[in-house]
Amino acid sequence: MNVLLIGNGGREHAIAWKLAQSKNLTRLYIAPGNPGTAQCGENIPISADNADELLDFSNQNDIGLVVVGPEDPLAAGLVDKLEAAGIKAFGPSGGAAQLEADKAFAKQLMRSSSISTAEGRCFDRFSDAKAYIASRDESVVVKAAGLAKGKGVFVCDDPADGILAAEKIMCDEIFGTAGNKIIVEDKLLGEEASILAFVDGRNIYVMESSQDHKAIGDGDTGPNTGGMGAYSPAPVVTDELISHITHEILVPVVDGMNRNGTPYKGVLYAGVMITGGGPRVLEFNVRFGDPETQPILARLKSDLLEVLLAVCDGTLDRITLEWDRRPAVCVVMASGGYPGDYEKGKKIVGLEDAQQIEDVIVFHAGTKDIDGDIVTNGGRVLGVTALGDTIKDAKERAYRGVEKIKFDGAYCRRDIADKAIKGSGD
Ligand code: AMP
Ligand code: GLY
Image 1 (tube, protein in one colour):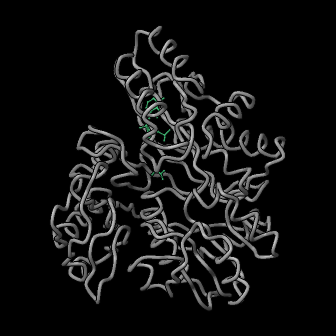
Image 2: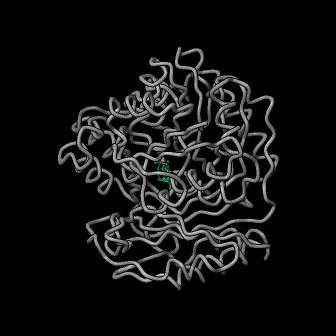
Image 3: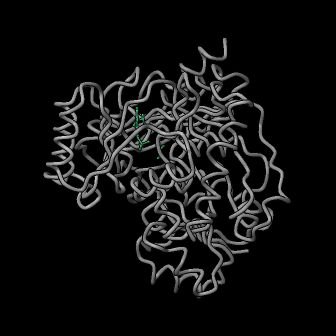
């Protein structure tokens, strides 16, 4: 079968790497892809938001499945367009993608489905938001309701900072129209985990757990990023918690989406805070997480293409997945300055040396091939991912890979997986 994968991040390199191992794959195309995905298939210069060209390409190249990686084309209804043309597509419809693209929609669904989340209110006028935040005397979390590349959330220690955040989002429009509405919610305390599940409209298959590192600085300090590293499994997520999250969060979402007339299929990602009072939802994403996908798929032994097709066909109940028992750790190497301004075009060396280390895979994200030289082309540049016998081994191996790779201004967190190492007693 020919497959077209949409996107160009580290997540897409990991998906492409895994799809390339599938026994039923004939040709893999990636639009637009990156130099990493070019090692797994053929990159096609069509951007992820060009639905018409993607549709034409699919028709002309006998594409049996389109896999949509990022949230923007999902929210824009790419899957609906492909399916209307008779092309099988992995990912939710535009209506169902509102679960991520509109945090007010997600809050409403959680409320009506009795899913535990932070108390929150939605505002579309700055003056109302300001008055509400000013009336509170504790920490608040201010979120743009729309898509903001993982950077739309401000965790504020006092109301004055909260008002400033609301002003930046609503008045200065730092996230454009994504900030026309905001959510102001209570700050939750605990440890975070990412629970990703395949959903085929009815059946749910929960993948191995993982944990992201959203903040730019060691010890979870500084502004939020798209994610600076991840590991899988997350020791904080016990079997009992998985069962609780499945029954109290995932099943009610899938049921609620069916009741809404927006049935859910694709990857359902619940970002949860494990509080003293149990897991509470921070956000839903409607796709594979980035960088969580890198360590998760590094551990998947089964054929990914088979699973994605089962999701599209509504036959997920016939699938069992096999996972590598070894943990995996992904360390993101970023451009200096990210998540603020940064320069591009810095030559990257040492990629081959890093790959030589056993069980290390270097996933590309913001990279570009210029006449055979790989240069930086984004904020998050690479995801150096390693498997190890223990989480500590996996961490050490991933950082050994990082040491081999050099580019001007390269930055990474130094504490990826430390929480898991503490939790596992390694
Ligand atoms: P979101 O995109 O909504 O997951 O938010 C991004 C990050 O902000 C999360 O991964 C958390 O680290 C943090 N965050 C979001 N909501 C809350 C909350 N209610 N309490 C504490 N931290 C939060
Ligand atoms: N790692 C967080 C996300 O994919 O949104």
